[in-house]
Amino acid sequence: MDSASAIAVLTAMITPAVLISACGSMILSTSSRLGRVVDRVRSLSDRLEGVAERNERERQIAIFQQLDKLTSRARILQRCMVTFYMSLGMFVATSVAIGIIPFTGAVRYNIVPVIIGLGGACFLFYGSVLLILEARLALSTIHAEMDFTWRLSKRTTPAEIVEQHKPHFVHFRRHD
Image (cartoon, rainbow, N blue to C red; front, top):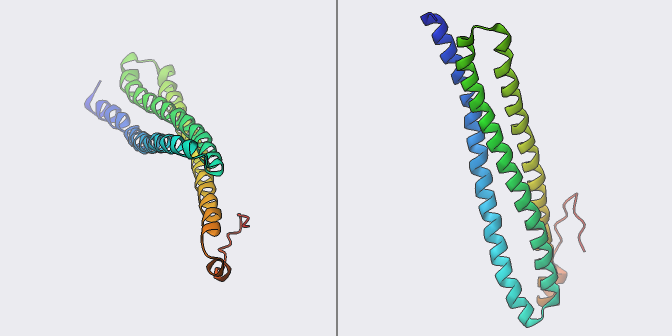
């Protein structure tokens, strides 16, 4: 292999590095999200025990519903992590294949890195779609918690203050 070919192979091997970096960023942010979900589950579990002792049924229901959604979020995030790690592995394999294929001398194997790279891109895309679904689930959890807090505050706040309040309408949310 001459030096021009060697440089071309090394340059091609570095190309998947951008996608490897993207996978690393997605893994890091997903891991952080998963950690926050786990912390929130632990916090709500502790609160649920206290609420059960005081027999606060409405709060028990709200916490149970949040725990249900948090469980779904955790499972989606775990699936995201696996997907992003598979994508990362495929991009590393693409880089390795780009480095090995020229030594085989067979032109027919030139498609292998392309196929592996496309597979990695598909996993990266799938993981991103899962994160979108998880973010929507997280938003619904936040809305449910805010709605519960709003209902509770309306009952405990003096009536003249509640009557003076103008509700904040959002086009996709229904308010009582």
